[in-house]
Length: 323
Image 1 (spheres, rainbow, N blue to C red):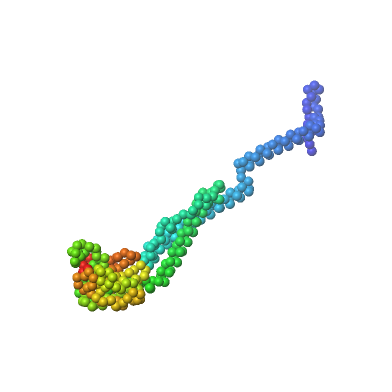
Image 2 (tube, rainbow, N blue to C red):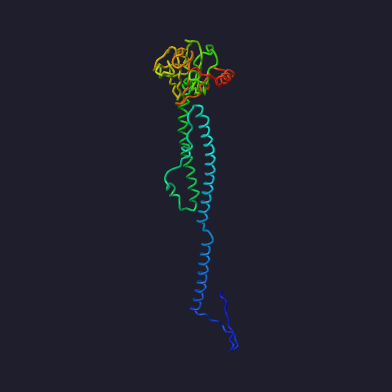
């Protein structure tokens, strides 16, 4: 029930009932509505500006979850990289050393990806940096895993050929221990027996009686068996594969010929003094990947640790070679 309003009339000094016309009432209602609408619009505008909508709240929650997942992914990839680095280190310094293979170059393992615009599609977003760095890390790990996988393929092949490698490495002395007359002249700088000058001796000289048997020190194929080299006289060169060759010089007689497959311990010739020599002996060389190396490092099938130490000391003394 609407309240009746009265107004005091100062002239008549009486209260008179206030009569409101329809028009006045209508305008009054409109003013109320307009005020309410203006207030509502301002409130909504301020809310939209300073308060997130339900949709925005949902999107923000989802964005936070995505950022958290990216962070967790980066941590996991960091752990994977640590494990991968360990695998690479083992591959280069253990597995490939065992099989005498060259380590994979670091420049190959760490090589980047070409193209400056590779990650262009990830630019222009609020979290572009996070997405780009994560994608780069994933690409880097993927490439390193591929290279490591190919490396292990090579290691497996080398492992399957390990038995052949072990048999091929020159791992014994070319003469039987009991036939040696005295300690061999070793690898290194020695006095030349004829010219009396200091020259580098690229092998070891084993002195023995004329005609003492000389044996192949590892499995392989005879490449040379002739006297074409004036210095070595009658000599034999065996290719053992895996980068190894051995040379046996100054033979009195050769017991093999080029193309013959030999096994470790097979007879290939006899001690002599042909070529540039001052007495019966065999000049023995080990060649690895084209370079002449110290043969004393390859007698582990013949000598005990004590015998090896004695030979190492004797052969390292600065003596005169026999060729």
